[in-house]
Image (cartoon, rainbow, N blue to C red; front, side, top):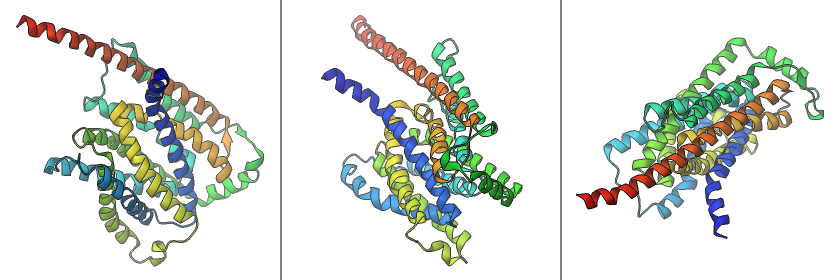
Length: 354
């Protein structure tokens, strides 16, 4: 029984990271449909953080009240920066870019996040790289493989695979491609790229903040409040003369707002912090490529996006790269445990000699 409970405890971060990818994949497809129906990305971002703050605040007051550390000016500045990136820069650039590119492309671009997060974590000395260790090489190669798999999904478009539920998608695809100006597509690519770089920095920054402010629910509320304040300014600036953008209808737009506010900005952000506290930012972002596979499958049903052999092959490559990274992280943890055990044994001996 103890072995079973121990196994479940060890599996929790892995299961949570996989679940987060399913939730994120669902958001991309739902948001794409809502954006196609005319939803404003800026108003959407504002509303979702309003929902997140309202939903999570009672839990933060209940569970974090006695263990919330004092707020210093340095910590306030870090949280303000984190909130600006997570609740303003990332959603506004990503969902504005999503208007001009496909869901699979946008989520595939996010597969650069593990490589960038690994790089930033190494810069901030949160991730060890020792070229004498096989595990370090496995992390580097695994990260490169996941990015390569994502690029395969993006650029290898033929041959296409036809299924019963994608019939008629060819004509829809060609008409939408003709309608979308190449300049708008380029704009979408740039915006999604900015979002991915910001996401990488944000994951590392969130891990740093949680070390000195280890109250995930309260941090989620504070980040959401930053999104409400700064998002209001941006939404008013962009949609001041468009009253229709502020109206809420009982359709996919409302579903996208509630889904993102409750499950993404609320629950997922908190769970993401818990996983990072346990395993680190690089571990969490290593699972990002799974979203590409999930979105490719869901999009073929939801928006009749055509699957290609490149997407299937890319998905397999991504999973292989992910396995390499997770194997390397497991090896690193085992080596660190052994090193800590040796130091713990050696410490009392040193004290007795003194």
